[in-house]
Amino acid sequence: MMGKSHFIIGTGVTLSAMRLLGYEITIPAAAVAALSSLLPDIDEPNSLLVRKALPEPLLRLLQVALIAGAIYLYLAEIAAPPWNLVLALLVGSVSFLPGRRLRHLVMLLIAVGLLAFAEVYAPWNAIAACILVIATVVPHRGLTHTLYALGGWTALLYFASSGLADGGSLWIAGGMAYALHLAADIMTRRGITPLPPLPLKLRLKLMSTGTKKGDRVEKVFVVLALAFALYTFVLLPFSG
Image 1 (cartoon, helix red, strand yellow):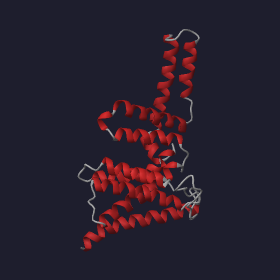
Image 2 (cartoon, one colour):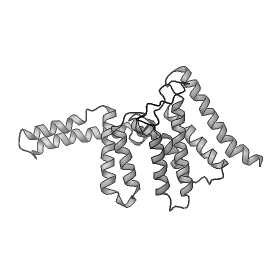
Image 3 (tube, one colour):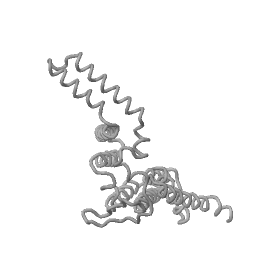
Image 4 (cartoon, rainbow, N blue to C red):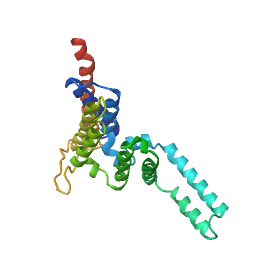
């Protein structure tokens, strides 16, 4: 399922369900729901969440900076020849990595930066750094698409927001939106493996991303999610 569909379904259904259950819909809760609806796909460098956070212009800027750094290392002769050339070639070669690898590199650099310079935001800096590191080493629909990840993310939100006024809304919004992403992926042919190393595979094979049938099924779920939100936030209050 495409990232935009995950976003609409996960965020729309989560906020609608919370509204019907009597939870206050705050801006932080809506933001957490939106993030969590896309978070399982952080292990895919070309996913909507990663592409929006690390757009192509940023990667191009990184490539230019790496090439400039390589030229500087060579001309400044920080290391004695021929090691200055070796260093320049090593740094410059990184700029020619595929986009997926470059995004992984940037994610790792951001993780290091969060741990080193963002202690004032603890524990969120450490949480974000750990997620970024894990996302760069696990395969797509691997660890992030398991019940372990769902439970871990929900628990992190619960404990990190326990002292906040709307803490209850935050962890419920995050856990529900994350769970809806996994449920949507169960609809696909690939499915998910919820409890590795157990070989249990959950997949209903209702759709395959990129096919006409898959696009039609995906649009049906999106329309249903939008209809649910319309009923909850527009028609229901009006009828009352």
